[in-house]
Length: 269
Image (cartoon, rainbow, N blue to C red; front, side, top):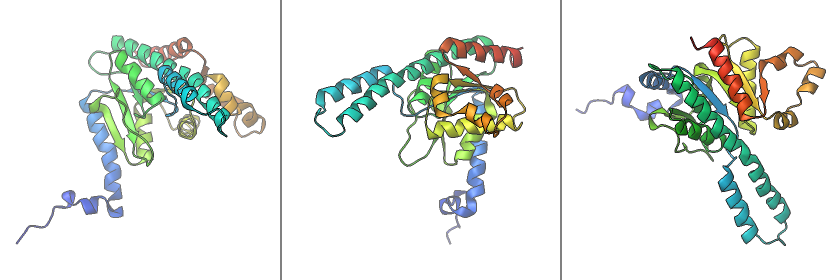
């Protein structure tokens, strides 16, 4: 008589709705174990668009479009404008690389036995890739919290294999973004970035985060076009004091100084 399959080896059960709580717990304990093994004490998290490319790639795509596209094509002008905008937006990729690199270099001078203020991103392309790239160029570790979704996304090459995670549940991925973080840096982005920004803002505003958190919103010109903070105050749905929950920064130098000052004041002995 063949022995019955053990419950913890039964994939049909483990992937069923009955085992959902087990899968959720797995996305808590497995990352926790790996972070401990790799001596990750805390993180600085970068959020931003997955669609923003580096300057070199953006300019290459623009050149190729001009070379191959038919100017008589119905959507030519709209597509040309989109490619030109892509080149313009590439500055954020380059800024994210530089900021991540500088923060990493500083963190390596600060910590010895544990890895402090390790750069963490969503692990995908765009600003996420830029943050991970900067961390590696700075000589540090690089964390990627990837998510399984239909049309995206792959883990970028700058994430350390031992610190590359693949989440099924968005809320568990968000938990790990927040749990280890000492600062968030929000670069321009779309729905996903807005979701992450508002989630963190709400946690800070409601006092759910007891630790001292620095929230940097990068490029005030971009974000004030996207979110009308003054209208929110005028309509009474947020308080003027809520604007003190975050800092706008328009340059790498400004963002770097605010992040480092916050860490030195609150987390570096």
